[in-house]
Image (cartoon, rainbow, N blue to C red; front, side, top):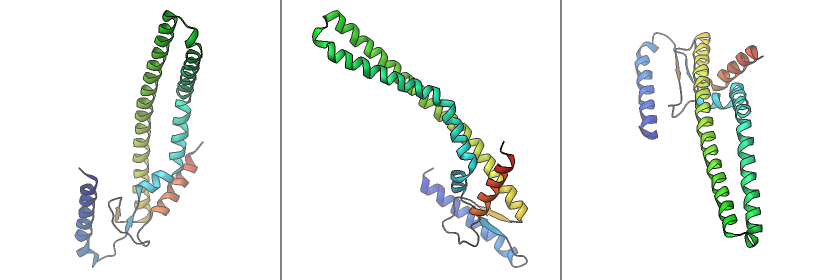
Length: 178
């Protein structure tokens, strides 16, 4: 589903929910809030912790990639410098070694990108579910009847509780951080 259609569907669902609660609203006041999950995820301390852990996890591979790249550059420079004095066989062997190194480098870089993307997606999936649970807990504790997420086209500051939720997420993180 395209981005615009997805946002339109979310807006329609949001309006339907508001309309469904409109009639009972006469009998009671509804407490409605809006949370930008994207903002909470981007600014949550858990996000920095996840990014730091991933950076540390993949640091050895990054160093290996940089070393392989340096090795290729050094060999290229050596081959260029010695090209005039090399025999035909020696030149072919040097070019083959260079191609093999470049192939290994490309394979290593591709594996690194795939592995790091997979791990990042796994970790951010866990993080998003955790933050969604925290939003739900916050809404229950504060007595909200409806929390609307990212499909909102407009929300006044009176119903936008993103900052309050972010503070609760940060407080929970501080309480459980080692």
